[in-house]
Structures are given as structure tokens and as C-alpha cells.
Image 1 (cartoon, helix red, strand yellow):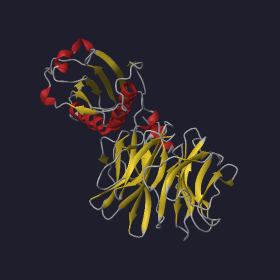
Image 2: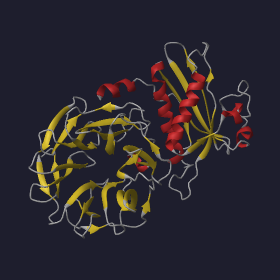
Image 3: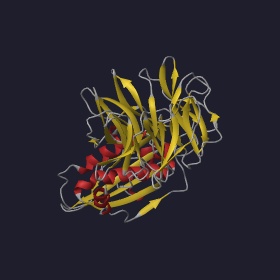
Image 4: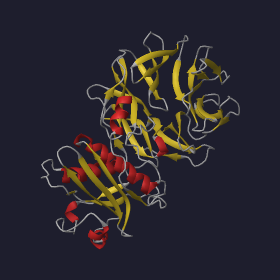
Length: 439
């Protein structure tokens, strides 16, 4: 992991920047949200060498592709553009904004590059067409092989400027890939790139959970014949056993500072919730009820825990203080609600609930109000996991007879299927990482 971070430090972060931080252009949580039309022109070659790599078209294509993935934009077909690309510039003085407003564009992206064969220098600019003003301008310089990093970094800057929230292109999703009697943990980027097989335990492995620093993964495996909990150091790939009590040892949730872990253990006869202090190597029981208590998840501030219990007669979501006191029922709609995941914003809890004979994804305020059903797919929705910042949810849905990872915006819109292992693999248990801060 240190090697990866180190290689990106070489990237020239900021030679110049102009931003309009005070204005939030896009309210991603607004009722009836509509995607914003954006125009992206081919980039200009502002160097002296011929564009043999076709970078002019490549930058426009990559920006268009990744902005579409965010679910917030509709890119305008270049065939509708009115400007003369030979005459138009990439600064305000060289742009006729009426040409862009007349084709319905709210935003416009332009840029230029200089590829001298050794280093690539790229300028990115996004404009507010209605106001005729520059919103964000960035220049990056690095090796040619880092050109995609430049694109992703600027997309993240666009999202921060327009929505007030950082993008998630520097995040990964861990998940379980199942093939008959074996399941392993994989990771994949938000845009579907860089699929990596993390474990090779040749066992049933499940419930991966990222550490806050993205350096470790907490999980459960039948490696030694019992469902025990483990932690893997991702830089060394070393696996350390955490708990191996007789019965279930189910990995659940890290505290935000990475010092504690929540588990569901059945060592005392039935499933109860425990907290493990990693530094002190201590274990403390939080729930004491003859019913089943499982799937605990911490609130971002660490003061509350949401969990699943059948103490009311059916599986429902409950909350309690981090010391196990103040238990309160959260969900009342539906006869089977499970797999809670607390939003990084702290105001919403996502979960899977049974409706019409199939699980779907719901979210609810932490006080039990404003219940929303987010998925309605025939393949259902299971095991929700929030992205950093709470813009998106990853979950599992059955598509074509197989379980796949899907992503939706926090309002339930913009469903897309994430790439994953092919063949006979079925997928389960997505877990979204914190930002890697690579871009």
C-alpha cells in the first residue's frame, strides 16, 4: 500500500486552481432529482508534437465515461455542438456561452495538453454555462502512464465543487466471490477497474470489513473448520486470527478510529454482540438477551450501534448506546429487516427488508423517521454498504440467476452493475472502503 501511495505523490498536485467553493450547484438529495446536461469538448493539443496518442479524444471520452458513472450528469452528443473547434479556445475569452446554452448545456468542460514525449501536462476546466464563469480549473503534470489518474482526480474535484461532496473514484469495494464450496475476498475500484483477489485460503470466507485506514480487512472464515474471525494486513497479506470461540465468530464493524471491532459471537449459547478492543486485546459483551442479536454497525461518531434482533418476535433493526444500554427498536414496517449499515453522514441507516417475498434495500432516519424503499428490482437487494460521504450504496442483487454487485445513488437512482469475476462465481457481502487519498 505504501508503494502505491508513494507513486502518486510524484503527481504535481496543483500548479494553479480557481474554484467557486461557496456555491453548491447540485443538490443530490433533492426530491425529483434530474441529471444535469454537460458538454465535453475534445482537448486541444497546446504542445508542438503531433497527437499520435489521440489524447484529444481520449480525455473527452474518459471524462464523459466517469461523469456518467456518478449518476449526476447526462453528456451531450458532440454532434450537437455549434462551435468551430479550430477557432474556439479553452478560456472564458475564447468561449461563446450562448452556443452552449442553446443546445441545453448547464456545464461545459474544456482542456488542453502538452505531451513532449517525457512528461504530460494537462489543463482541465469546467464552466458554468448559464453564468458564463469558470467553476474549477486544474493543471496536472506527470508521466504519460498517469493520464487516467489525472482524469479521476479532476472528476473528484468537479464533484466537490458542484455537490459539496468529494467523489469516490479513489475508493474500493471488497466483496466475496463464491465458487461452489470455496469463497474468497476480492476488491474492485468504483469504476469497475482493478479487480484483485485478496485471499487464497481455499475455504469458505465471508463478511469482509475494511479498516478505516484501508490497510486491513476484518473477516470470517472456516479456514480451521470453525467460523472464526481474522484480520488480514493488505500490505503483507498476512492473516491473523482474532477470535476462535466454539460456534459463530461473525465479523461486523470497525470503530471509526480503528481501535475496536464489533462481532456477533455464539460462545455463550446464543448470538450476542461483543466489542473487541484491539490494542488492549479485551473482549466485552454488549447485549444480554435470550433472543438472537447480530449484525452490529457503529454510527460514525461511535456513540451508537445499530443491530438486528428477533427479540420483538421477528428480525428487526434496533439501536443502542455504544456501552450496550438504551436499546430502542428502529424498524416497524415489514416482518424481516436485517443487515443495517450506518451512513457516514450519520443521519441514515440502510438495511435489507423483506417485501413481497423478496429482500429490497431501504433507508431510514436514525430516529426511525422518513422510511424510503430504494430498490424495486426483480432480483431484490441485499447487504447494503455506504460509500464514503454517503453518496452511493453498494448491494447485492440477483441478475441472470447469479448474485451481482450493484451500485445506486443514495436516492435509489442510477442503478448499475459492477464488474466482477466471471464463470460460475456468485457474489456477496460488499464493503466500501474509505478514500485512499491517491487522487
